[in-house]
Structure formats: C-alpha cells, structure tokens
Length: 219
Ligand SMILES: [Fe+2]
Image 1 (cartoon, rainbow, N blue to C red):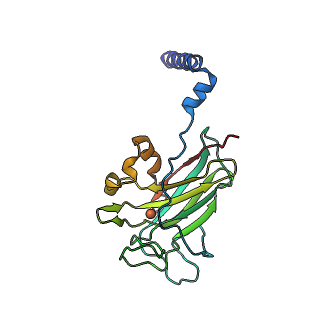
Image 2: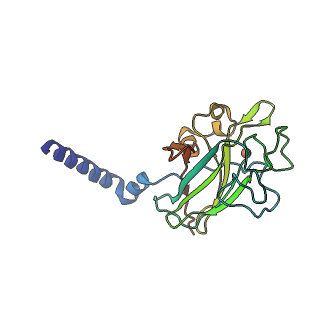
Image 3: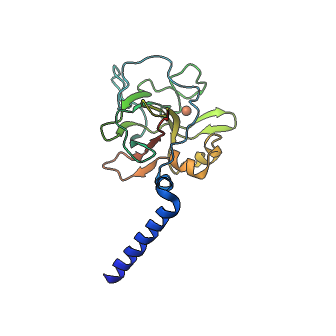
C-alpha cells in the first residue's frame, strides 16, 4: 500500500514537473488528439440522388433481396482535438459493394454490380458524438493494372465551425493495405488513425471501431 502511494506521488510529481516545463498550453497540446488525416475523394462519389441513405446499407428500399456479402458494423465517435465529442456532425459515407463495384458510370471494374446494395448513407453523430452503420465488407477492386485498392469506406464529415474532412477508412489485417498507393504514402501514425480497430462482437456481426477527429476552425 505504502509502495503504491509512493509510486503515485512520484507520478504526480513528474506530471506537475512536466506541466511546469511545457507550460499549461504546451501540456494541453501534448495531450491533444491529432486530426484524422484527409484523403482524396476518389472518382466514385455517387452521381444520382437516392431516397434511401439510412444507416443500414444492406437493405435498399424497394428491393426485396438484401445485399450480397458479409455484414459488418462500423461504430465510432466524432471528437475535436481536445477530445470533446462533436454532436450533429454530418457523415456522408459511400463504398464499393462486396464485389468491389460502385454504382457509378466511371467504374470500369468488370465485377458484377450488386443492385441490392445501398452503397451510400448519410447520418449525423448523436448528442455524444457517436455514429453507427451496418453495411457489407467492401470488396477490393482494381484501380489500375498494377494497383488493387484494399477494402475501404469513403467518408466526408462536416460540422459548422470545424474543418471539413474527406477521408477513407481501412480495415485491419488486410494484406493489400501494405501495397496501396494511397495508404503507403501515409506515416505510421496516420495509417494507425485511418485503419479501423476490430472491437469485441456482440453477436455474429464483426464490429469495427473508427473515431474521427476534426479540427476546430480558427477565425
Ligand atoms: Fe474507393
């Protein structure tokens, strides 16, 4: 017990020493979160308005059959760099179907388009900054003759007063992450922020955790 207390006092002393050296602002900066790295929007942002853009991409309104492919849940929180939750952020999400096809006229991938996959969703973070959506694991697809894009989900996140973010979320343990021409241009820290974490499943559906950090706009 005594040992524990001494260790705790030592830790607190070291901490207050650090605050003195760095100053209050410097210390806050040390603890601050790094904004989520941006990435190109890519060529497949949806072209045509669709009514059904809800948080379940596995069912597309008006289609009797659900989407092909393994289901996943993506769950996260929108935060600012100080770690404060951001409520009411707009998340605009689009991705390829399980075959690696986008519903987009520029997509030249010969894989079959899944007509029952919603492909596009829009939602707002809740009062605690949380969001969640159900989808299928996106397929990898050829971007070029020597470049296969790893499974990923495109995001645009915006909220008044914050720098709007366009980025791509990747999946852990994907061999193609290592050869992706976009992802391999990122630093190790940036890659870590862009690759979702596999969370404990609550049933059969795997859950991926992906937090987004937005930067406050300064006037
Ligand atoms: Fe893409």
